[in-house]
Image (cartoon, rainbow, N blue to C red; front, side, top):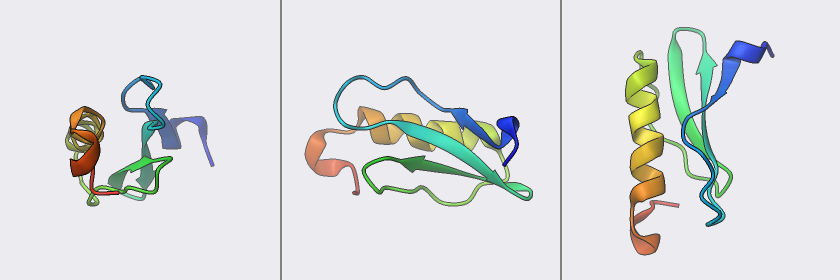
Length: 64
């Protein structure tokens, strides 16, 4: 895996969630250490927004 294939999406805020974006071909996917994964996106920015939304959601609504 290349260094640019996995980039931090949002900083870890100490709540057990650490979301990153991973590139697979022409798609980017947001993933979290809790097991959550967003949809595959062609836009890296959209994948980062998915990750940020997951991190900002209330604990019961994280879709884990």
